[in-house]
Length: 346
Ligand SMILES: NC(=O)c1ccc[n+]([C@@H]2O[C@H](COP(=O)([O-])OP(=O)(O)OC[C@H]3O[C@@H](n4cnc5c(N)ncnc54)[C@H](OP(=O)(O)O)[C@@H]3O)[C@@H](O)[C@H]2O)c1
Image (cartoon, rainbow, N blue to C red; front, side, top):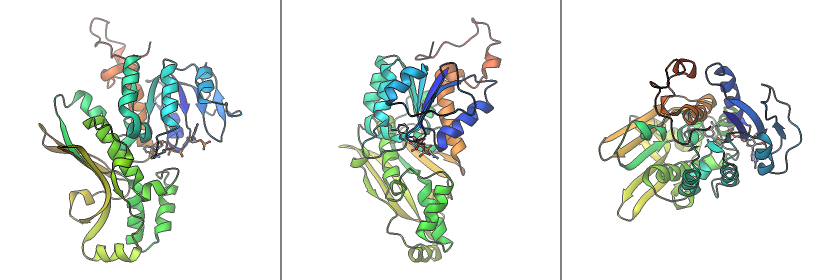
């Protein structure tokens, strides 16, 4: 499968390294990389592991035409207020018959239903496992493991930057020192204010609601309040009382649709939602048939986000039997082989 990568920052580079590491079993080829300021690299026969970037191509359309890939991997910066230009990048790929994998929550938070339907009409794959919880299964979980289960709501601690800031202040550091530490870890959005003011958590709430609850909403419709007003003094006072703060994304089905909020909440230290230090994130799903259950990812790093993208690519390429490495599954005769997944590239 040939890949055209749009955006080559923390996640794009981690993905390229993961693809190199797993190349023997999963033979993906990167035929193009397009960035905002660092130029463009293209070779339809496959780029070397350390590609040289030339001048930036004038448009994503020109880049996609030149890369001649099967799948576009959209890894550009989050824009929580419109989801652009990522939405246009995805549409440009669909228009060229390319599958799309993205870690960018903007398009899922703003235009999921339209993009899903456009992909389906064109028999193309569209996957976004990393958009909400790095590489931990959130969306792909529902395809195979939970048939018939309806999501009634969710509760998620899904923003890492805010926790790094809060923990820095609990240890006596300043708000800005905490933000700098998070940036150093490569986990902040391009604009750190999106994390601090709650936009990242709101976009995640909207994305979860759009995909799992058919909410057709946007981050602007999420009741949002971030952690910008917290001070070291206030955080330390709460710590002395056995309390801490988490930015929590909540969704709940009600009579008028789906109510969403992404707000800083004061929690007891022994609340399960408080057991999420550093980059550890957690989501609980409230359902009709499975009660409440959840997924926890302990201290994920950017490599786990890259894994989420990789898992989408593998699922597109080899379908749901992807737990069998290709080298192993080739040993099956065609009569024994599982049926092909729809939307699989030729
Ligand atoms: N980092 C994480 O842990 C994490 C976790 C989950 C999801 N995500 C999501 O994954 C995406 C990428 O995150 P990241 O941390 O890799 O971001 P990043 O380090 O800021 O990199 C963004 C990349 O996108 C490029 N870019 C921005 N606008 C572009 C445009 N209009 N056309 C072409 N390229 C463009 C940038 O180009 P230049 O290099 O030239 O500036 C850069 O290479 C974001 O949407 C983020 O929300 C990230």
